[in-house]
Image 1: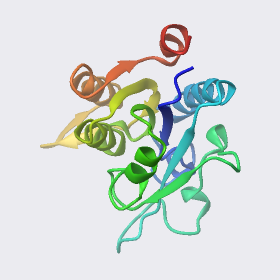
Image 2: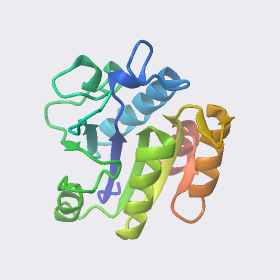
Image 3: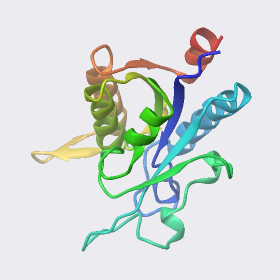
Length: 186
């Protein structure tokens, strides 16, 4: 069993799900896939780490402190013995102690999933790569939303595929949950 591997769940929080302040495309499906990976890591007694975004800046519209929307979603609830890092920026490493904790635990291989693919997931994957970690991203355990640029809407499915394509190969190995379980968790 590889003990230098950890799963990091990024911002799977209520505001991203149906009825939340920043609903994402297919968040429920991504949450289910994240839950599958969490279950496998727990079965193998590998570390599962959660990152929770709390918006602490003026004008924030979601992940507001002490709200239901900022709470971790029921599809991925942490166990009492699992670490939860609070962040205030898209990068899960910035001002959180996550990097120090991983190094203290001699963790070199990260498996990531979460929300939003185009923002916090992308930023965290790239930061992890820059910090020297080997990164696997569970693409179908991530969710995003439709974006707009220059008065042109880029639908969520295309945003998702574009960001996964940009990450894959250089910054991370992007796979689906079932592929990861079949080929990499043996």
